[in-house]
Image (cartoon, rainbow, N blue to C red; front, side, top):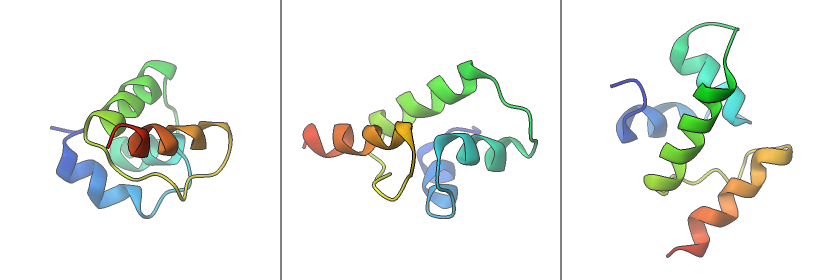
Length: 68
């Protein structure tokens, strides 16, 4: 599965944004908003730390920690 917990954890440390993460996993430059939304949901679901992300989507990191 492309967006499995293991796969996301493998790549998230090397990315600065959710868009970067989607590009790295899909292996292409063109990404869709639905892919970004899906990955955002998966990051929350699996409680994967994204506190190092930059930009407007960085706010997802506080959601991960809020539900602990």
